[in-house]
Image 1 (cartoon, rainbow, N blue to C red):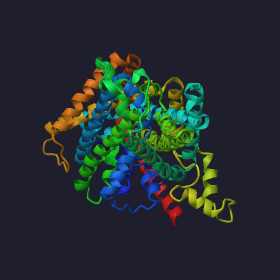
Image 2 (tube, rainbow, N blue to C red):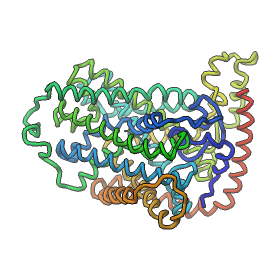
Image 3 (cartoon, rainbow, N blue to C red):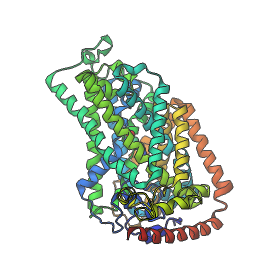
Image 4 (tube, protein in one colour):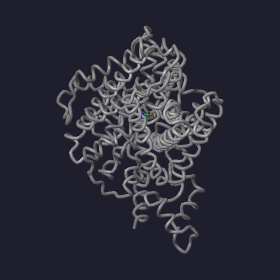
Length: 551
Ligand code: ARG
């Protein structure tokens, strides 16, 4: 059975622990840190109020990010032709779809917080859950943040310098990416509220950008306006599949790039607990949101192909800027650059928020050094906390209104998992520094799909091992089988396609296993009881503190 130091949290906060994709490992043990409280304005009475349409937009919002504005180059370069690229997008989408359906079944069968960590622990033993957490902290979270930050940097530079800046130095892009990372991390360190409020604002931008590209593309196709390219664009006469790559490894690399744009489907379960009627609505949401995203992405790609020369698509990570430029000139490129960089900034903000909580939870669990499971700036920070508790009273010079705005779900400024977010920011900075979009996307994909594969394989094992387990939602058995076969193909090609990144991922996993079997796992028995006690104490203090703050 699953035993985790977080198990007590759902008991204390029965309905508050599954926020909209924001809790990554488990419910944070302090209510002030629980993002679902932050997101609904601090109400502990979690209302199961999500309707089908809410769920739909939430899941779509979790998936769409930087990918559709940056991956097409790598997909097209490796698939070799527009037709093959579109096929890659569809296959990537279907893979995400089968994955989401499989995770939905697991979420119903093992109804605990924590996603893959919990499923893997339950099915394979705690070492697997640890390995996932370890890789999430050192590879997946900072890796995805680095990719988003790099795209943010590239789009910002093009917003300032214009679409022609394609040759601008990558170091300027990376500098801006780092600046964005620092800003977002500071924002999230100062206050939970500040972090989540800005998330809401940026959420809209990506919808505007994607719908913009798609609608423009349809109009372009309908009116017959189309790019008249040089000779290398002969696919328009010769056929959509001219030049298709025959090397399977290239197809794998193209798929990794496409899968990046669909990533986030593994978060569907965070939405489950919020539904009025989860058994009916969760499958409905999955089976409409993913087809919708696939349709949008395919339309957007067709739009790119109709408007831009293939050579440009293949050479640019900032395809939306080129698209805007081609259709509307400099104004179009500026608008799209701003929309996409805003969308990336929002995505960076959201991952910083969740990563902080993930590392924090790992520290609390005893998976990581204790320091990462702490809140605020340490002992000396008490003074600052008291200052903000007193805010708005005669003892403080901070105006009450300002404090309310920042801190009504927050127990004051800097009352956030600062150590955890600092670790995440440092690792992200390293990846930004040494990586590029192309290399990081494969790196992230290999690591991510190793665990997706293992988890969905676990679903099949669970069907055999525990056939009578209650499963509120059950997929066809073909769904996990398709997922496992395709991801196994992807993983098996990785070492041929991108040996460096693959070996790096393998090295991280081996390191994780060594850490578990030589250290963390062995101390587990003693540590668990100790951490549970510390956690419970914290819980009570946080609870009292929070109640006082609210009243
Ligand atoms: N699909 C998103 C994008 O295109 C990536 C989401 C990152 N993944 C995650 N689990 N946070 O940018």
